[in-house]
Length: 162
Image (cartoon, rainbow, N blue to C red):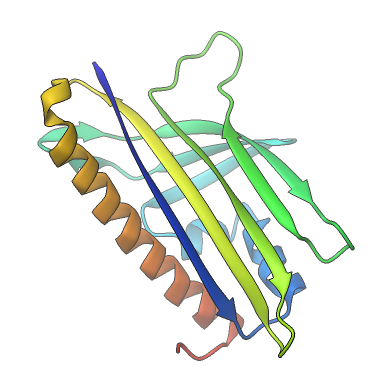
């Protein structure tokens, strides 16, 4: 087994109030409806268990399920920052995990600046020499997921795409 990882960051101004975006990002029922490849999220307090659909990476089929410790910083009450870190239950071994954050700030001219960082790692039964190809597939998949999530978020909020 080898561990592979990819990271992506993005930032955009969304023409919606911060509280509306926060409501979406903290809703474990709504997020799978807006996020491609995300089947469901189970919650247990601050721990969220993310279930992705089955994926194929260089011919290796996986159905990632991983647990994240979610930290919600409400700041002034409208939501400011969400941090998540891989935190499998005691004694459990998860081959996939994520690390990252969302930061929401009010834009002076209106709307909300949404910054996102996502790092994903996965163990696969592939040689370490496959890293360039696996990492490229992961990065491309994450980019497509992000683009589709963005479009779905804007549609859900009733905001026209730029």
